[in-house]
Length: 99
Image (cartoon, rainbow, N blue to C red; front, top):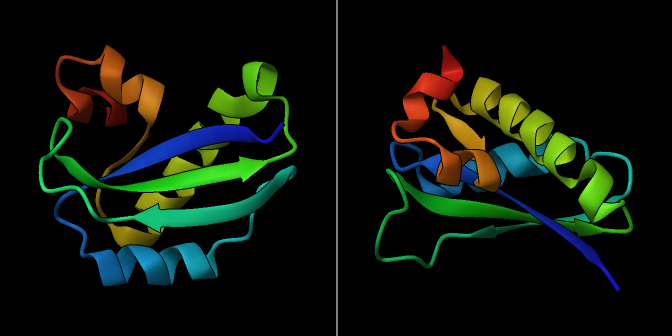
């Protein structure tokens, strides 16, 4: 079974910019594929683009750490917030996470 983690990107980023950044970023250990999903017509706390990370990593043990680090790197490249999906769901205001 493949492990799965998801990163959501602030809607200020364009799908093309996210795709380019994902192409530039190295895949984390155990991640075999990073797929940009920009088909959403609604937003999740200000995010419309997801990057789905799949691979052979330990989803329960390492998934959140992998997603957080990937979100940090993606945010640095794009200049907009990016969040591990579980963090995004836990926050009343996701932008507080960056402080």
